[in-house]
Image (cartoon, rainbow, N blue to C red; front, side, top):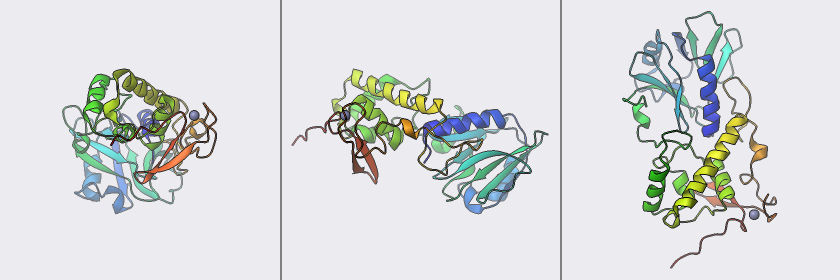
Length: 286
Ligand SMILES: [Zn+2]
């Protein structure tokens, strides 16, 4: 599953290669890829035709292409294996090519949505005054958003009777933090994933947010990370940040701070990786 840095890498690629181009035609090769567009494939194609793509936007892991001079945007759901590729017209069709978008210019490239497992897709949605597609209006700002409110996040954490990793993955509190970066930021902050959020002081919250931003920015600097070999960015290059991870995927390996073997525990149908010495489990209160 791509996380925020991967999605931002794709967004930047689209901004460079697709923004400001006018759609000449589109072709839906698999109906599942537009199943979230309830009016169907023909409607999807007709609505795109003749419209200019605006500057691609992102909130958390959600990515959309505004259609200039309309109140609509194409929302991209990358799912587990979705890729947005910009390819020369003459490049052979990928085995799992689902949607093709051609442009009314002579640049010689087209946008392709390729998805092996068909969990992802594209769909058109109305946008609100803030430009956000209506179906993601409830998603909180992400920590790389200049308008993210650290103080409001801290207060919301304190109010919420939950544990810290659940809070980090709660898209209504903070968006774009997935399992990998949550484990990384918690390791850097020396916080156990089950620590109750009600115990968080303001400095602790701010320190954690700082680490969340650092791991994301470092991933962005190297082009995003992913454990899914299917993930390829908009120009077809794989992400390769995984070697720099300190916690995620390091079960049994020595902690990079104290050399204690790292542990993995099942957590909400996923895993949590942590150092049992640096990240002490909270005491259970009766
Ligand atoms: Zn340690």
